[in-house]
Amino acid sequence: MIVQSTSISESISSAEFLENVRAKTNEILKEIKEQYFEDNLPWVIGFSGGKDSTAILQLIFYAISEISELSRKKEIHVLSNDTLVENPNIVKFLNRQLNAIEDEGKKNLYKHNPALFNVTKVTPKLEDTFWLNLIGKGYPSPNKWFRWCTERMKINPTNDYILQTVNKNGKAIIVLGTRKAESVTRAINMKRYELEGIRIRKHSLPNAYVFAPIAELSTKEVWAYLINNENPWKIDNQELLNVYRNASDIMDCPLVIDDTTPSCGNSRFGCWVCTVVEQDKSMQNMISNGDEWMTPLFDLRNWLKEIRNDETKREKQRRTGQDGLGPFTLTTRMEILEKLLLIEKELDMEFISLPELSAIQIQWNFDGNMVYSVADIYQSIKGKKIMVSENGQTKRKQDEYEILEKVCKKHNVNAAHVKELMELEKENLSFLRRGTLYKDMQSKITKFLK
Image (cartoon, rainbow, N blue to C red; front, side):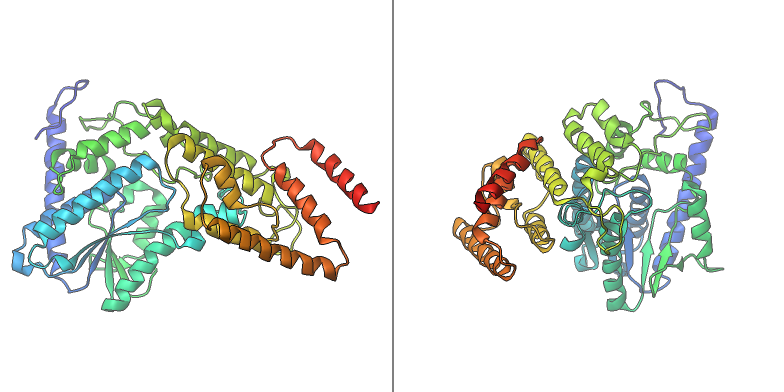
C-alpha cells in the first residue's frame, strides 16, 4: 500500500522513504523474534493506545505470529494505565482497543495457551485518586512545582503491577514504545541505562529491564508504518490518526511523509483535569473539531487552574502546620464537588465514583467538618440518595450530635446553640454571596446570650 495525499503527489522520494521504513521495521521484527527466545522472562508491554505503543504492540503481534505456534511460550502482559480522569474520548477508544487486543491475543496469537496472554488496565488506589486528593484533602490543583498526581495516579499503579510480575517470576522485561527522537531528555535517559552489547537496559525497578525496539524510529517513520500495515486486532489505524488529527492544532495530518511535511504525532493526550500545562490544546482542538460537549470539562479545568493561587480559596496554614497557603478550604472543596456533579448531570456521565464520594466525606470529617454533607450535596443536585440509607443518615447524625454534645460539655458551651449555627451555615451553602450569613449568625448569638 502506497501512502496517498490529496495535497501532495506521490514522489520518488516518498517511495524511497517507505522502502526505508519497511527495511527498518523488518529488522525490528527480526530483533523482537531473537529477543523472544533469549530467555523465558515475561514481557510487560506498556500500551497507552497512542501511536508509539500501538506500533510496538503491532510489531510484536506480527513477530510472534511468524513463530511456530508450539514455540509461543513466553508470558505476555499488555499493561495499560487509567488515571480515572483521562480524556473521555481517549478512554473510549482505548477500551475498544484493549478488548480487541485481548480477543485477538487469546483466540489467535496464543490460542494453544491463552492463559499466557494477559491484558490489564491498572487504576490508582482509592486513596490516590484525583478527586479524593483534590476535593477530599483539598490538595491545590497540580502545577509543575507541586505535581502530586503523577506518582499517585500513573507511576505507582503501573510499578505495582510490574513488581508483582517480577516477584512471581524473579525478573521481568518491560517492552516500551519509547523513542530517542521524542526528546533530548528521553534520549539521555535511555542511553544512561543501556547495557553494552545487549538489547535490553536496566529499569529503575529492581530485577526489571527495558526492551525498546523502536527507539531509533522517527515520528514520521512510526506513522508510515502504522498507516501502511493493517492492525492485527482489526481496529483501523486510520482511526488512531483521526484521534490525533482531532486533538491537534495541525488540521491536515500528513498522509504523504517527506522532509517538508509536518507531523500530527506531537499531540499529547492525558488527564482532562490537568492543570500542569498552561493550556489543554488537545481538548480545545477536540471541541473545535466537533466535540462541543466537552466544553463544561474544559471550563472546569480552566477554573481549577485559575483558583489554585487564589488566597481566598486556600487555608492560611499548610497541613504540616507551617504558615503559607495550605489546602483548599472546605467551602472551596464543596464548591468544586458541586460544579463536578452539575457537569455529570448536564452530560449524563459519571466522572467521580461512589467510593470516592464516600471517602471524601470521611476525609472532610477528619478535617473537622461538621457542616458539609456529600450525600446532601449529591441529593440536591442529582435528586437521589447515595452512600447510606435514610435510616443510616439519621443514625450518623445522631452519632455526630452525641459527639458534639460531649465536646460542648467539655468547653461549657450549649450544644443546641452550636447546632443551630451549623444548620444556618448549611442552609447558605448553595449561595454564591453569603453576606447576610454573618448578620444572621450575630442575631442568633445575641438571642442565645439573652
